[in-house]
Amino acid sequence: MKQLSVLSMAAMAALSAQAQSQRPNIVYIMTDDHTAQALSAYGNSHIQTPNLDQIAKEGVLFRNSFVANSLSGPSRACMLTGKHSHINGFTNNEHGIFDGSQQTMPKLLQASGYQTALIGKWHLVSEPTGFDHWDILIGQGEYYNPVFHHQDGSKSVEQGYCTNVITDKAINWMEQRDKDRPFIPVRAPQGMPPQLVARNQISARV
Image (cartoon, rainbow, N blue to C red):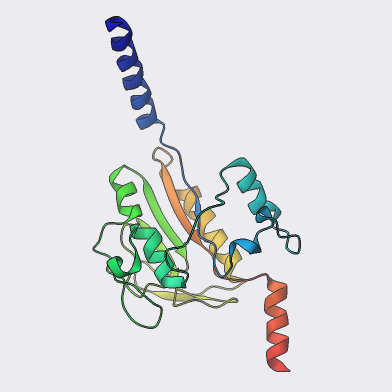
């Protein structure tokens, strides 16, 4: 029995070492402006989201999960910090600045050797911290030809549909990263399907 215990401990140590050397890459897609009912993976027959459904099929689909705050910026602060809004300090979109000095998920991953990036909607007023690279929308961003705030302090208008622009930027970062280190890009699109944007624009003109 003692020998088995020693062998078990040795096996656990070997598995732990293997896990350390084989850290998985993570692609975090933070979708925006919808509820769970907007995904056909949750049984909505009126909307089809086959690509997201495929991710749900091959991964984990949470059926008993709840938001800490349903507002845009505050929900992001909750996910970044793991704290409720009254603790992380960012309670609503109208006022306040996110305190980037507190502990966050990307900082913990950085400390574990991950390359971190944030591309897309930030909506927390302060500049991002814990990211080796960031390229964010100003405020909520525009659906077409959005203005980006770059890490070097400059700003530029990027031509195209916002979600497509963000996707291209995320892919470009992943292609140029250090291939010897694990990575996590946070891709945060802002937008609705182009046909809905066009419909809203027509309604606004009428």
